[in-house]
Image 1 (tube, rainbow over the protein chains, first blue to last red):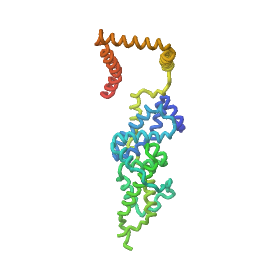
Image 2: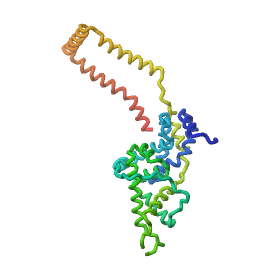
Image 3: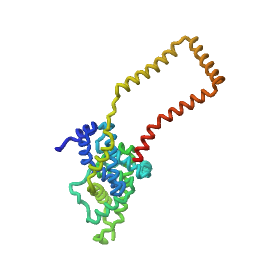
Image 4: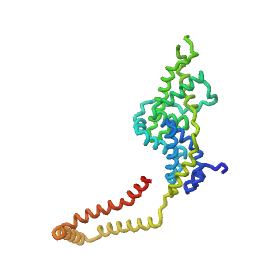
Length: 192
Length: 129
């Protein structure tokens, strides 16, 4: 089928058109799966959760009023399912507080040269590993912010958290990565 | 060995890593699995107020309105008469049919509980599938 606008697919799916919904699943499954994978860190569980997300989305589709993007709405369902599987996730997000007063800039991806600034492939892999080893609440926030490029407001609205809590969570996640980076030793670095 | 990364460079490296952290490929296409599940789920029905819902709500609200209107417009002597009769009836029941009041109370509770049985049966069937 040629490219059909997403809005039209949603409207058709809301009227019970399964073919339209199948196209929506095809379009969005990778992002939902990746969100689940980042949080759950288990391929099979992530697949299972992504599948459940779409089944729930189908039954809840008549309630989707287009106030948020369809993708964001799917993430909200996926996140609620993550809460069911990781009972501590919701509490750990609420416990973040909002003590970071400093304004975090709404930075965009610095992808004019993605490799810019990386000393070596090892350093890049080291940071990726450090990201994977963050706590589940930080992984969720980071995935929404950087992988899915949602704004702080969108994340706060989606997770039903105060804006300050979202910023605090992201700030602390970066602090953990900074600490990890401080302990990193590149073999090629020499004593000054 | 010394770590030569300045705070600015650390920030830049972290931001870059966060944005370039690779997205995993799908191990398998979920579309067929999802659609197979959906076949079993009835098609979503948009919320719609039917004519029978409308008629029922009109009747109920008119009844409530009529009761309210009557109570507010009856002469005080009639209200007092109704109150007296109802007290007398209650006392008569207490004396001559003591079993009737608890029976009615428990009967109502039982009836309300019985209303949940079809739903519970449906849930049990769904879970055992």
